[in-house]
Image 1 (tube, rainbow, N blue to C red):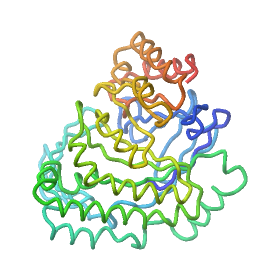
Image 2 (cartoon, rainbow, N blue to C red):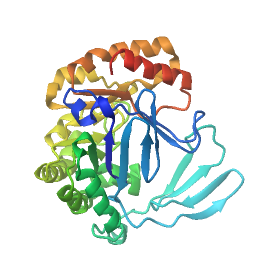
Image 3 (cartoon, helix red, strand yellow):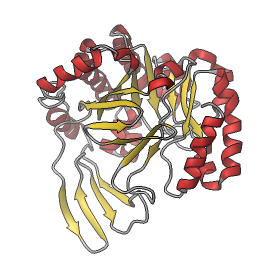
Amino acid sequence: MKLLIACRSGPTGSVHGSAGGGKACRSELKLTATPWQTGTTMTHCEPGAWIILDSKACIQPFGVCRASRLTSAFFPTFEEETLEETGDYRIFRATNGVIEKQFKRRTGSLISTTFIEYPIKNRRDWIRFRDAHLDPHAAGRYPTDARWEAIKQEWRGPGRRQEVVSIDGGSFYGFLRDWMGFERLSYLLFDEPDLIHEMMDYLADFFIQVLEKAVTELEIDFAIFWEDMCYKTGPLLSPAMFRQFMLPNYQKVTAFLIEHGVKLSWVDCDGNIEALLPLWLEGGVRGFYPLEVAAGMDAARLQAQYGRQIVMWGNVDKRALIAGKDAIDAELARLAPAVAGGGFIPLVDHSVPDDVPLENYLYYLAGRKKFHF
């Protein structure tokens, strides 16, 4: 999991500034192994300036973008282990402990995967998983002492405030779903609510302990939580359950972040998040991404409803980039009033799909410049 990303994009300013209505570093994510590029994750900060991201650094011709990592999820990871393999598929235990079946035939960046077994099925499994992989003080969660001191010198030195530094805030539903599976988690919310309370309460304290060193020793501009707990028409658990299990823990972590100068928190959640958005606000989260258009999300409508209570990234319909230039023009025109309203950075509403032609993507980037965003 990413710890920090510091990004400076020359005259365009910072994402943090844009969230408050200024100009912004514009970033778009391209999946790996696409028809455009194989083996490299591409991020686009300013039309004409590609950034190449890897686990150590990112490089671009018009500015500086640096990244470091801390493991604020489970650590150490599981050893990947092949359990069965044929010419068509492979069954293996992944580094997150999940037994998966992946088919070898692939036509793009996405791999057809079946999740066979999860590492947590009951309280006994949880305790074993927690003790083995969720020690907040485990050696290796942070960079080496020498690297950490270098990071502090770089990011707190002259010119530091030209850069934006973000930190991962954690995940409650999303992590448990990955470790238990959607079906089992859904049953346990009803059948064993005490266990879900115990797990989410532990995670809140765990995130605080892991993040304390970073937020104490560095200036962090914003935190990003991850959940992916909604589908096309609404959330995967009720707002009442969010309030019962998650809200107190969001409040606890965001209060800690605010106390340490991290006043802005975002959540990355796919699907239609409207039923949960007021609860996230109550929990101290003001930023929302990716606002998927196919799920009915509309930045202008949210802006009219919530005003400057919220800030947003996303809401560029990825399907318009597939459809062609006329659709791209119409999509950018649709978003122009919301951009003018402030507090909104338009980005493709999640990863750019494989079936977006490069020509269309470049046309989209040029169109952003024409619309001044």
